[in-house]
Length: 273
Image 1 (cartoon, rainbow, N blue to C red):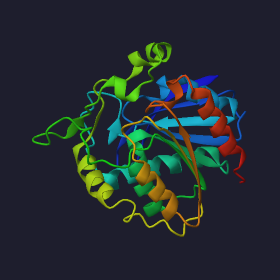
Image 2 (image 1 turned 120 degrees about the horizontal axis):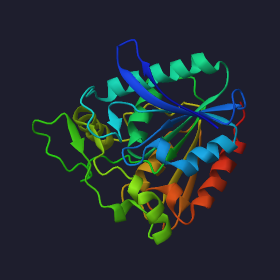
Image 3 (image 1 turned 45 degrees about the vertical axis):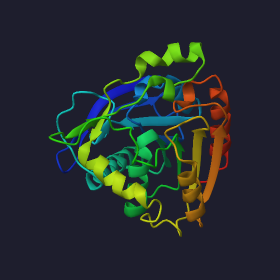
């Protein structure tokens, strides 16, 4: 397996660190764009990366500055627009490197709503994407820091609320969970406004796209009504829901994680490019 850690600089001068993986040079038929949430870095989500490599993906995982698991970042405090510009710049960079291979975004956690804002406003040439444990309601208590004099907000959560109740699964991944994950204050403010009327502000009704949504039924951070609203509003698309009883936020480190892999395989097998 080839693993590269590098940086991409956008035309606006923003540096975006990223990881990429491939089994061997040229030995892939898809490209995965992994957009991590603020809890678990893509390079720590080993089960998921291994799954993608086995499915003949080349994997790119950018560390978008507005939302990162890397603590101590001190630059680039943008909102939805800046997030969208950074994602599109990186997607175009990947497309230039990989040519005509289909790019499929795999989007985790709090990255889901800003990704949808990007997707349905920019309309990139992406015909399918998957959302894992998508947080659409950003009006709750997840953000523990006061907004006053802050440019980034720390996340407030208990590990028991996002990790499996199974001891062996918790012990394997708990040390990898970012305790000081933070999000741009500007992004949080704009996400809160967007999520109030979600999905009304996303013009998606006539978009022809395949969407897979994977979530645990014991995940207190997700809103089932918002997930159903996305499915109902995307009338021209195909939205498949995959839910798991007793599973929490970190899907691939739960004792039922193989079910998620099986469902993701099913979702991918139904894509025709």
